[in-house]
Image (tube, rainbow, N blue to C red; front, side):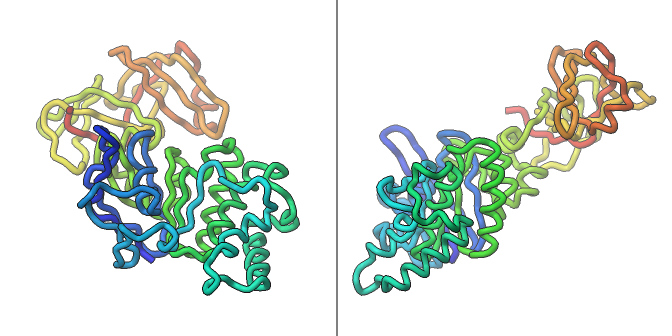
Length: 354
């Protein structure tokens, strides 16, 4: 089932949380609403669920072409998973998962045997076999979130909405659970929208990423599209680490620092003052100039712990620039703080100076 948001605005007093937002979540896809705090992503999710109402006269929320904007929460067929689990502490895992089925109207309620079978099916699905009789306080954070997800799925929702589902977990558990969520989604295929401020989480898990800022959508696309082809300066800076420079575009060339480079293909034509961006992994760093245009710079710091090595240098303008090289490449460079290296960007993005 697809979800379509049309021209939704939401204000809280003088604060505009959403400003004429439109969005489509295609049927069967896993969509990430990604942005900083205050960008409007959770408000949008809650409006989809029916937990908040858009401003009077503002747009539509369509579930498979049916406007549900004024439909009560209980009739929207939505499964909702909160950041802090919202489990019933006095109930076992089994009873937490069964809750939504047991409170259905009598005419819609499955039999006890059907509820039992459905709950055990979901406990297996979320890989919690053998824990049905435990209580929330006896579970880890990751296990509690799996119970919360099983409870949301128990009623066979038309859509699944998740608000920072892994936000309360430590980094290692977050990584494990986001891989598991992707696999689970591929198995159940229900249209899902999740809120996150974690760029890695969105890029790793989602089919489609919606980047939000100040109540508006900056860009919608696949993880590759938003990361490699950002349409705005905000998207470029928000998604991953980036080096930023003041520069100038003149006669088909980009000038920044001591670099003069061809003007790259961008979404907008830029002439004159510009903002130039290059990601650390798109920086070539050498110990010799090799006869090509390069920016000489002293090394100020080397961080070699990890799968790659981060080398920080200081440009002539007094700006720190970060380059990233492989461990194998670094081993043959003999670079340390105080060394002089030569910097060349391989791929740059240019936006008009605002």
